[in-house]
Image (cartoon, rainbow, N blue to C red; front, top):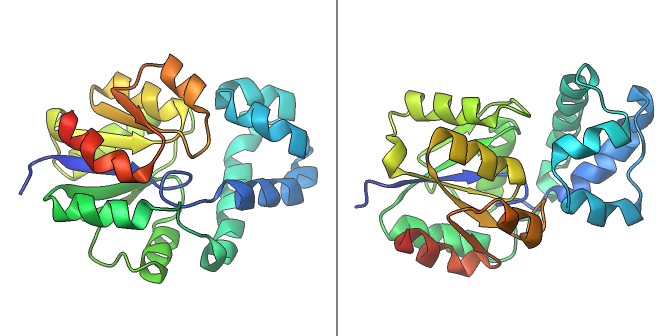
Length: 211
């Protein structure tokens, strides 16, 4: 049994929520007087940091928490239709079988993650599911998770698909594996120098073991 704890981001890393989230955003954007995300904008979305995109979509710091809460509420209605990233279920089982502790840290609701886990045969895979939100202070959420679950920084590995996952992990002082199948492109993720980066879920166990 390893003393390492592998903490997974949920949206975009385990669950393929990108398309559904964009659809929900476009549905509710007029209510918040925000710009609609067009098909041609999606590449730009993936190739930029979230901080750089908010202004162009007229999403102010005041609007942001209300917008995120609304998206989260709508996402709950769609959770039965959300599919796992191809290959991630098998990868999670392999990592668990190798003796690592597994957890999820998400800005989604804990209930949504539990429903998703139940629907996809992941009962008993995760040692914990932690729900916390702080869009530009993700390091605060990570620190709180580590404290609550009594995880030492040198025994934690974070796995995420966004630039802010890398930035937050570096600020906290934990190892970070970036995955290129989610929100951000491999190029922008690599520019922030994560400990390692992978394109395929089946490579995750090897990446973890080599850290």
